[in-house]
Length: 156
Image (cartoon, rainbow, N blue to C red; front, side, top):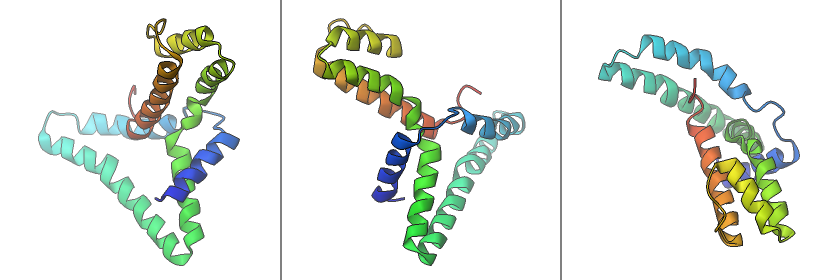
């Protein structure tokens, strides 16, 4: 994937947020539960096999499709990259809360921004400065989207 695909996915997420935020977990859940049933015996080989089935095989498939499309037409490869990133990053899940905090900071209402951050992250933000609230909010969005991308099966 390239930077253009990432920018495209972020723009698409901004203009067309996901309507149902947990749909990807619903798709992946049966596969993850099957892996847990069949490959959770405590054996190292089972763990490696489950990891290969969960990480390597899908990554290879996506990579092969991406490069085939890129060879056919660069725009097809970029559009595929945008689609993959749009459906996996799930930044829209955290956008509304972050936007509320940003709106409070823009109107210089630091108390409201602190309260919103405290409700969202369950942290004591009473002593946070404007910069700290903004920084903590950005870090939260990035870490949660990272978690959403690399830990899709968590909590299942």
